[in-house]
Image 1 (cartoon, one colour):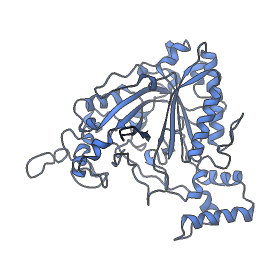
Image 2 (tube, one colour):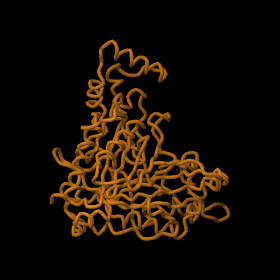
Image 3 (cartoon, rainbow, N blue to C red):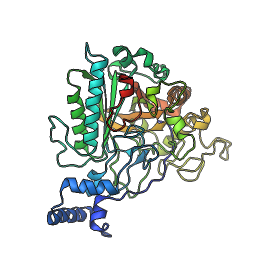
Image 4 (cartoon, one colour):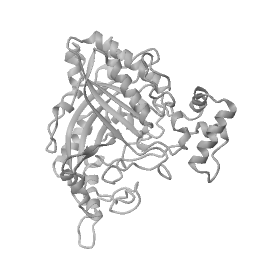
Length: 447
């Protein structure tokens, strides 16, 4: 749960503002919804026409250089009636689901290839998955046997992302194409990993701003797997819904802390270098150009222990104020943390083992990762203890320099470690985006 920063983003135009000439000042969400519905009835406005209008004015772009509202920043606040119209493009230099803003609902899952399935079957599967992702992200039904779960909704900022695990390459006879960066992660002291819920041949990340749209995509991807692959594990997550706050702000996790303040920004000169594999990388195979490496960790939060702390004690563990995310050394959320500042007694204002201090890039040789997590809650056990925490997902060009470097530092004395437990883990190579007419991973599987 590294401490990183949030960019500014423009509020996109929406279908409702385009059609109505803007939202009436002081109107409630219910009034605007009723007004929009009335307009649809009067003008015979079809869902497809609505989406077409919204697509021209309010796209959330996934291609390189179009990082509007990316990573740990939630999507921009918009009227409720416009949420379904937000569309992310499937084709582009990078796969969708990396640069876009946090989505309200998410599913992450891993598949293992079926016995006897190899490179040919994997290629056919990725071809099916890519076409399904393209269609669903455009608000269209699945090509075959659509369940109609999302029939009444628009794309809802749906993204679907695909990756390959370490074991995939042996299963398909492609060991020589396996990146060195995909070597298994080392063991960490906070690990209590369930192997059945870790790793996998193939990985899929699904995110959307509507729960039914996200589930519809999950079901379509599972059905597309057919006899070629079976689900190894699957986890469900959530974030704050767009428009739930008065203005866009850094997300909070289930500990109530702002989470993601120092995420790297695309405007930084070395952003691409740290997050994406270069087109002519010396360390990575050519098929990974434009791709990234995803580390996925299920991190359980020991909420009863955490909530037993005072707010001041919680702030000391993190190194930031709980109310607004500002560093304990003073200022606002984006103020640079003063690591040397002391109080009247000569004690460091930001404790030496504070999470935000330890995870800073300048304390880790410049190591950085783009975090894009989901919270999760899987019920309450017989003792009344919640099974809840963070589906930690981070992106980097080199996991050894990114996640591993920071996690090793955290292992040596992070104050937060006694309140969390890493219960599942995975590392996946996520190739670059597919060009029109191609499918994700085609350069690997047909190269």
